[in-house]
Length: 297
Image (cartoon, rainbow, N blue to C red; front, side, top):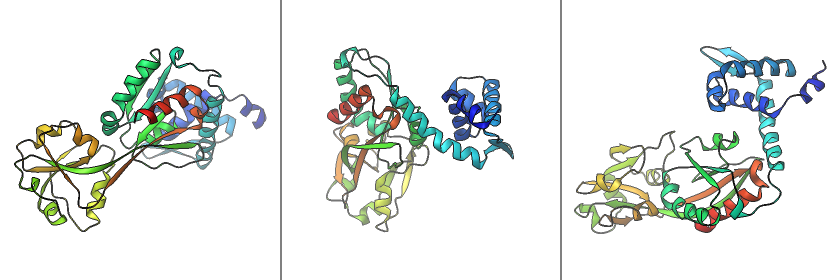
């Protein structure tokens, strides 16, 4: 059979299997993510190998590695699938009658600063719509490109032919500490910050808060005595302690009001944007949900 005839019979479900094997570098991981059996994934890749006349994946040590041709195919396929799903979206839309699920990926800040008002508005205006949230950590871009989420929210920068962006809100970092902390009186300069004992957040995936680079760019070393993986209940950690923490203003506002908030020596902004792909760009439902995020944020 000629290549062109075989290729025309290839469906998007098969191409998605190839994309997942490519992204995760594992047949078994792709099977788990797609809720398929490993034998189904293996059979699908075997058929695609014949279609594209290429091994697609080869053994490399204990894992697999995509061939150059596979990498080229996946780079085109992800965009094609997004475009096709966008064309298949609903032609009409009414919030009150909207059904289905909208999947949003974000992190702790967005759950504090944005989601409460957003969820309340959705429940009031689209009671039949289901919302599903997942943690992005440093994997948000991959989740969005694979279609594992419809909207990604965060202080990140994404670019690409099939990526759309809209600004959501601005915030700024502040220091917080217990009232008994000597640093609570008077402004904080870089010398006092250098001598302070810090509670820092090291998010999973290696994403680093913007204030770290901003302060270190002034030649100041942050003496981290306690390191957490998320904001959690910072009030409990800071209350009665000699520790200070640098957090977004909206996070600080959600904590114990008895904690003292002190401005940073230089303005350290935090810009939160929302991202989506061409897969949902033309969907009236998703456009409405994105607007609700902007309005409530």
